Length: 178
Image (cartoon, rainbow, N blue to C red; front, top):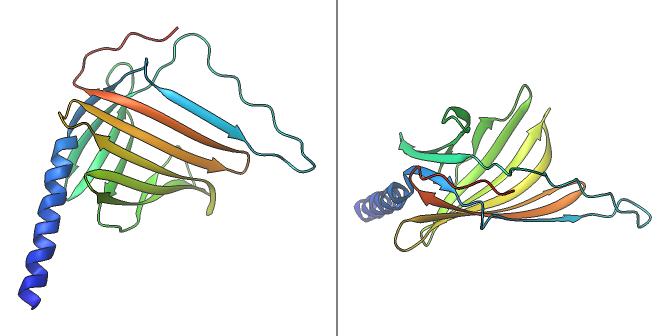
């Protein structure tokens, strides 16, 4: 019986690694298909806050480099020159992962798991020990392996947001959106 459980765990781990290996590579965002939606919450007595202005000019989204290291996925955001701007390491076994996020006393705390070839990351942004934002990111790969899609749903005390970004495998440049 114990042997059967060990084999099942090994097969599940192997299967997860096989799925993870398909995500490995450098991914370029498709700015033409990027979608962003933000819903503002009401702040007492029916007053809504003004939405932040959308950026004018060029909309920039970083390339994402994904690698598999020591049983974890490493997501790296690359700036316009290809230099590392941020990184997040996640295991996909449901254990909690803590990554630094933009300064002292700030961290990105997450749990991640595969389901039917889709990676689901449930996270919270913690500042000085308190969660200031929560969210769920899903990462899915097209059947041909050429397109990676990230859908993010986030919520903080003032708004709910949803974004959808498609990435193409490789370093082909996407013209900026004006």
